Image (cartoon, rainbow, N blue to C red; front, side, top):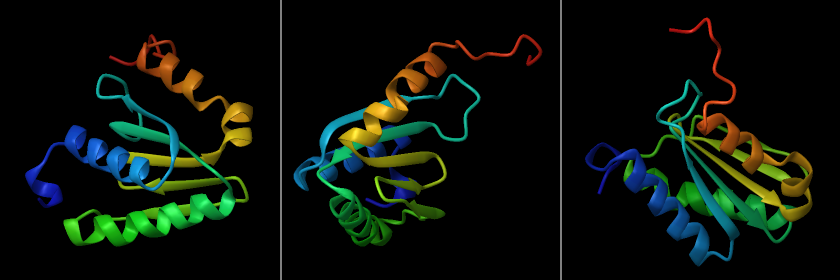
Length: 121
């Protein structure tokens, strides 16, 4: 199925399934439909190493581009790869980076509305 034929939720599930098959660990998906954020879903996964994270990103491109996914930007650092698909962000991180940056805590608080501005209607 192409990108236009399935929901953002189904696309995120497809990404999680693929990453799980490629030995990514501690996969989480955050639904941010109800908050003002740059993406509707955020997928976070642990990679064994920085090389594993880069390989996962390359494999995702090969798997998802033929299905219509558009990779707007891929940013790689030593411990972290971020893939921007527009409405889905994918973070592939080493476990050390994941603990250091506490993305789950931030995204959980964001999805719970903790950072809502009283000035936004």
